[in-house]
Length: 67
Image (cartoon, rainbow, N blue to C red):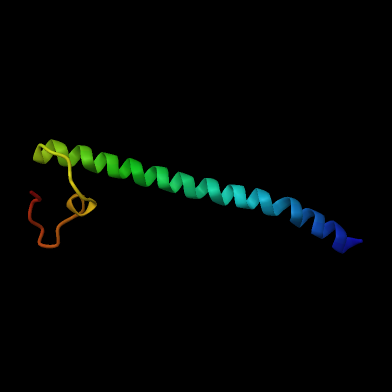
């Protein structure tokens, strides 16, 4: 009887946990896209054009300014 109750609880909890995990992943992606959008805005204000690649948005290894 106890095992049956535990199985019922687990069968209810698994879909809820999967939904919560999906929501966390979606939130992370939204934040990443917002970060890229802010970086594009900063890049455009500094260099007068938008970056063609994500590499242009990142920090340069030599510490020099971008294009």
